[in-house]
Image (tube, rainbow over all chains, first blue to last red; front, side, top):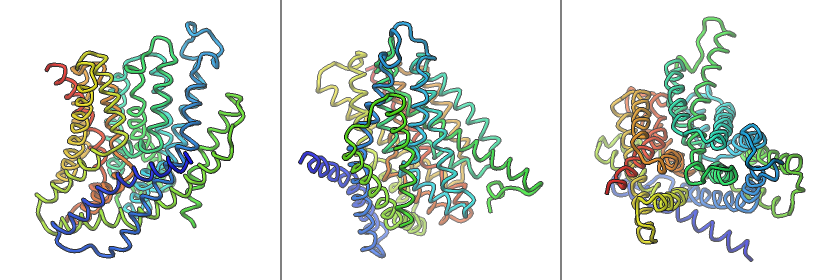
Length: 263
Length: 239
């Protein structure tokens, strides 16, 4: 019974999220553009599918993945698991946490619906030069690395903005070197990668870790993992483009990659 | 059918990671396999339906609106649409709600606001307004950039510089939350719509390349909230 109740609640809140957007779109179409929408039935059906799909997706996550993920984050950061007295833990002793953060970052990003949507669009717009799966793997590796490094920051207690400023610097350098066409998509991928699936899980990991590590406060140190994930997704996509240009340059001699010429 | 197969492939990694860590590292048997399996199936079904609905509704609607607005030739309505889309989708965002509440707790602990429920609720609400305005401004900036063909890297790097400078001025407690709020604001429904708007607009305006000019809107939307939230933190500190 509880299951049905919570399922209805989630469906309701999803509908509440989507409804204002749908109304706004229809109102703009009607009053500003002044033309009725073409294929209204198909679009309505599509909106219903989006609501039901997102609802089912969230219910499934709530039921299965989120509780497990949160519990594991707690267990992995507990001093008992690490097998040492809390005061004597060094940052190296948290290696399982870093590994878990990496794996969690990669796997949750691959399941992120928003990233899939943007990858489909990028594939279409680039005429197939950007592979859906390649882009998603690049973003996922970036998020995984970012979350792992973010965990190290929480454990070591170094200031967040040092890492972020260094990351920005790297992005600036890469922007100058990477193929021009990938840059906007790469910048977007940070915000896209951190959405429905990743944010709740990695926020739980960060807060759990900051609570468990002696001398850290959840309030000051627990945040920032999402920012790391976001930044490293950008770095990783830029690097992916640089690598594929290098590789195609080597394979085809002087011929340039499709990303660089924009065809 | 191929959508469903794709969804299976998307979820396998999560299941593997959890299973491996649960069994081999933590040494717990996975308790309650039945609800887990049911949840997994729901996630699968949901993702498949979502992607199908996306192709049927969100993408075409976003693109057609962008085309019609560009054809109408009114910059005012285009920018109004951009602002409302950003503001409207963000103000109701559940992830933002959670972050705003957390931030109000931090502010109360830090002594920036009185520690009673009323001022905390007001703080959280104002913060949500600030972030939603930031996202609205971001989409407007992004649309302006597409229309005027400004350089995206230049704008984003300027934004980064501002973030670094303002970080040194902002109260320590707000920095982590500000950095996170940038990424939190772009939800699963907003992202496809905004992507469709950008690409649609870039293909409708003459001389723009959809690949080069169509993307980048979300990048603004994850940058401006950082700035706005830190400025908000500075202002509430003074008053």
